[in-house]
Every structure is written in C-alpha cells, then in structure tokens.
Image (cartoon, rainbow, N blue to C red; front, side, top):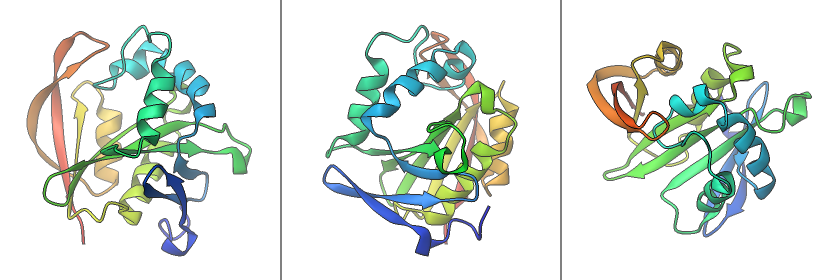
Length: 190
C-alpha cells in the first residue's frame, strides 16, 4: 500500500448531508457507493459463502435488496458510511467488495467488510481495512469489529490491521437463520 492511505490523497464526495472521503491505495480506491454498484453488489452477495460471512446479507438475496442497500448508504440520515472497493483505475473490477464504518456512542465506530469470493486471498480486504483505519474518517477513538468463528481469514484481516482480540460472543446471521459464534476485536486509535 502506498504510504498508508495518505491524507493528501483524500478527496470528498457529497453523500447526502455528510461528506465521505475518497481514499486511495496502491491497488484501488475506496469511494462512496453509487447507484450503478447495485448490480455487482447483487452478483457478489448472491454467493452463499459471501452472505453467510456477514450478519445482514440474506440468502437468497431478495429482488431490490442491493438497490435498497445503496439507497441507505447514500441517505443523509445514515449512521453507516459504506465505501466501494473500486479497482477500475488499476484495470480491476469497478467493485471488488465493500468496507464500512457504523457510528456508535462515545467516538466509537464498528468496522465491517466483505469482498467478492473471486477476490479472496488477494489481500484486498487487508488493504481496504488498513486504508480505512489509517484515514479514520469518523475520528473514532476506538474501532470495533467482529467475525464469525468459522471465518479465520477475516480474523487475520483484522489482526493484520492492528485489531486485538477482545472476546467471544455470538451474532445473528440472516443468511444462516441462526446465531453464530463470533470473535470480537477492537483497535484503539491515536
């Protein structure tokens, strides 16, 4: 990755009432979602393995779900900022996956991410998480994240990004229709 995600490379895009930064890395750009992303989001998240790696993506994906996700990500009253992992400037796909930050109380945010199954084991998730952590667009003092315990690859993404293990818990997975054991991580900022 190019010198972290250098703040001088940040640009902002008006996403509703709030400005959301565009963050450049060596292999892609993190940018706010746009309506044209809905098709690739639907394509990637229709893969059961991607959906089952998240809490909120259903499987099968209902008609209109990806368009609704994009609309929520662009709403002015949103609590979650979502970035497309866009590789088009490097002749990669326009959308490789997404990374997000959800605002919590007390200058804290929760990080989430997924990449399309065809891009697993490429380091894209690690690079996206590192860039978002370096930019810290919410000015958070603490970041939280959780992964399902049957997904050690995502746990490695977090530990590579400076997150430390906090404890075990469980969360509901819409795609699995069940509570699933999780590992919870945190990263103190600044």
